[in-house]
Image (cartoon, rainbow, N blue to C red; front, side):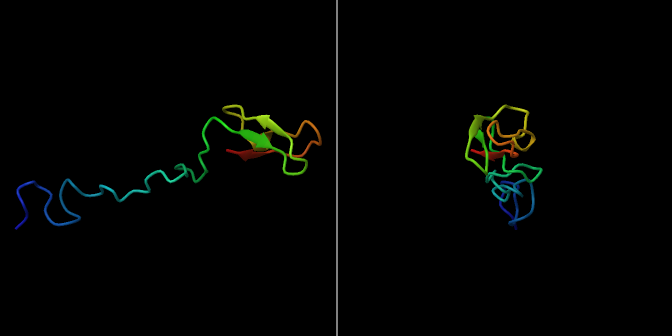
Length: 74
């Protein structure tokens, strides 16, 4: 018979699911890396960096030096 706390055996009752999630391990719900608002955009070809702008993905920017598509660095 389960205890009087209402949780019952493991996996039953209102206590289910606690501690069983992904725990926010660096990936957002869409599968991205979720690097946040800081960081910079980096050119993979020449190494130039520019500050990351919130709402503008780095892959939409081009390098000011060589024109290559930028990537994100946290």
